[in-house]
Image (cartoon, rainbow, N blue to C red; front, side, top):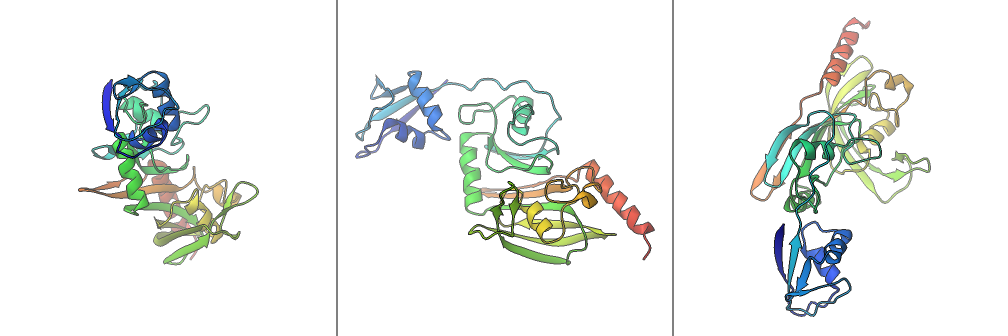
Length: 300
């Protein structure tokens, strides 16, 4: 258990819960309520309860319990690509959700168990600031401390993050280009660039390799919308191979899974820069080899 001393500035008159939610690293309202209900908060040495107001100038002592041990889970070993104080970049396998979902073992649970647990928001799992789709593999940054959560959030807010993806797509896109489109959710729950929306999505690409009827492109994301690469490329006529949600049967059958990989991640942090790269997983390497073989035997 750790004890934190928090000094309330003079003149700050707010509910104690509101002060604690702002002052405690990565604290949620539920977490604050739990600490108060368990008698872990004292103001000027006296036990404090929910509903108390601050008047400014008080000292608040909070006993923060150690997090519980991580839940034992079975799953693939998660490789570490880069690490810094409060942060780790891992190589997410395809087929694993980033965060827990019913009936599935998630990436954060695997990382927590395999690394012995963390202390983030009072829990043993690492903090999540960005995500990868279940069927997308590659670089993903996780926070291993509350301060790491804040550092990651600030890096994304200040656009000090560079994410590059590799995608196998149908057709022959231009050698390079950029997309800046509206981004909306359609009535069927899928995202689209073809409905008016004040939200924008931006990315750029360049062709890395061409095959017969397909190409490998490197994508640089400027915004981070849900399913963005899949949606924008599909709406532009070049769906990602293996994409069952935004593609069609003609390209779904060409790949063993969604052929999208977060190849590199650069984080510019105060006093440090993290560069991580995830190798192309074997199933996508095999896909590239098959496409090359098919291209070499296709009539010119």
